[in-house]
Image 1 (cartoon, rainbow, N blue to C red):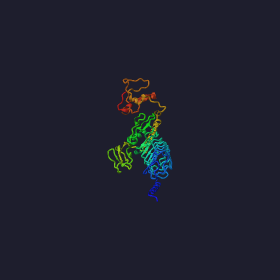
Image 2: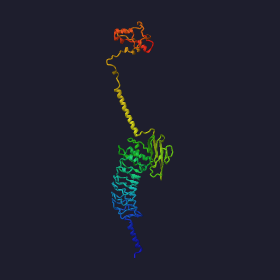
Image 3: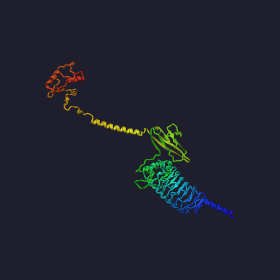
Length: 485
């Protein structure tokens, strides 16, 4: 009959068969299995099914096939595979570890991230891929990673910024840290990065890349420095770029003083609007989990959180909406953010232009009005040039102009009487008395002709009629007193 010792041995073997024993050259502590620096060229087997943390770092595992885990490891949440010289990872390698939350593949020889490489890790939160040889990243490599919070891709050969990881609608929804330092990036999508929330820009590491110097890059880094973002403050000495005229890297923050660029200073939050507009001031805090947000107006008044009938209202996402802007609404607004570990105050400057911005229809009407005015001006000029009557055309071709000395104006302006051609002028002392002309009140009417003059004119012809003037007629036009000649 078997003793108690034999019975314990059988129970131990049964437990080992059911749950698995600690593999050779490994150290087991509760649910932690450490096989680091064990000179392994393959994953040891069998693995205990209760393993929660598996450390296989610093070995010689060059390939991770789909069958590296014979059975399902439902409790495994951390897998460490760094410093192994891994050059190949199967797209089905993680099918047996669906609850993995931490995966370390750093310091290996991976050159590419294939399509849907991590799609089986829906619960993955931290992924370390730094210090590899990665040059190509498939756009679907990180699909289905809805819980991923930290992604380390530094010290690789990446030359294209993976914007699909950050673009709104397609980015990883929980991503709070992205490390792309020490790669081969020469340019950045600055406009898209500027639009990212501050809590993501606070953990966007871009130092150590051969970036090309330009003012948009300076604005991006300078804004981070003004906001005291960790990715800029902690690595500002390594945030350098290459000028186009020189191969010597310079500090990005020093671009404002360089003569070739002379970039303008960066302003964190300045919003311009017009009278009557409705604007929304965002509270872009770097604290992702904020307990509360409060707004203070330029006059020092706190904006109530409850929506009222006033022109200012705090929205559900913490932004401040201002309706029907007035000149007195201009100024600096403060957003007070309270977080679990620290607080933050953000300032947004609002500039209100003292005129109403025309809408698109008003602008179109103004353009048409200007065009019609120009056409009308051209038409008026043409009418003036081609349709205005010429003075020379109003005269008859056969009409002989009257002599200047026989005109009415000459009789009025000249004190010397007119004479017939060839007759010497007579002085006032030798002139004989003239018979008083007949007519009403001893004068002839305007336009009349004295009888003696009429008889002489009949003898001398039309020429004499044209040469004679009628001073009495002229005087009758302007005055009752005759002009004595």
